[in-house]
Amino acid sequence: AEAVQAIDVMRSRKGKRLPDGDGSEVAVAPAAKRQVGEAAGRAVSSVTFGGLGLRPWVVESCEAMGLRVPSPIQAACIPAILRGEDVLGGICFRPYYPQRFAEIAFCAITASEQVRGFGTRVMNHLKEHAKRDGILYFLTYADNYAIGYFKKQGFSAAVRLPKENWLGFIKDYDGGTLMECYIHPTTDFLNIRDVIRQQRDFVEAQLSDYFRHSEPRTVDPDLDLTDKALSLLDHIPGLRDLGYSEAELRALAKPNDALAKKRADERQAMTTLLDKTKRHEAAWPFLEPVDTTDVPDYLDVIKEPIDLSVIERNLKATKYLAFADLKADILRMLENCRTYNVTGLYVKTADTLERYVLNEARKLEDNLARREKAAQAAAAAAIPLPS
Image (tube, rainbow, N blue to C red; front, side, top):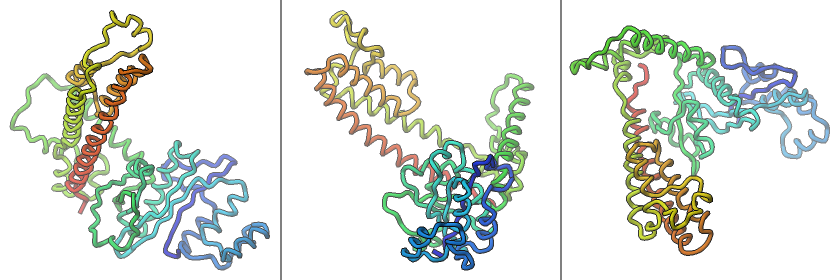
């Protein structure tokens, strides 16, 4: 427990505002600034639970559980809560200084504040805190609900920290995904939005100038696109300051066709699912549009009719941007059948085909996920860290 450090962020109900990451200080209780900075990870022996303002019955309950001396975080948070302030969230981490990484053991943001971006702000302050201690990497095991959050904070399932540096130090969790974040020592995480804004403005200005003055031209087959991209990278504000050498910038400037590969994989999966669906013995009612001369009220009941021939035309016309889009149209087709017929042979046929489609789609989705994970790992390995 003494090895665990934490950052707790509060917001006063009296109108104090958590900063937007513009370099201003986090609104933490004064005790948090003093005690966490001076004695993180060890108890503050001069403070008692009673001295923090807790009622006697609460103090007695703490003592019954063996809690006699508050931790620095408890000493910082409890008075703030009693004053009517809110704890927005916290991140606990365990540092391994010789290996220059830290394990994030716990991360939570109150639900009402998650959509307002406080999770990102807390994480950025944590990165600054760790950076000052010489930490270069964060590792954490994320469950399925947390993977999206950590990806937004710069974490990736492609772990580049050598395995011998962390194996045996952090706890392994079943069902969790190990994720890593590189903490660049020269990045100002509290001003990250300003840096990105400068970079975006620069790129937009370059594009605007190019298209304003360019004449129709043909592509020179001998043109070195890497050199052109390198020239642009060299002028992006702050990029050279990160410490990248010219060779490392050149590696960054190489064309990246990962997105094109992903789209090709998804299109192949869509084609496979559609072909298998059409060949299934239960597909016969869905191969062509419903004949409204036989069922004149069909369009009165079904407002968005669709069948396998329409889906095939949509696929050839590249109207489906993702595998999930084609899958959704097939399922909508089967739901239309159930809606109109309610019971009978057609409904049983739709149910049979749906079970088959869902099973085949799951196999294809699993394969796509494996391919994307492998591609991300390869892409991460190809991008150099500054020397």
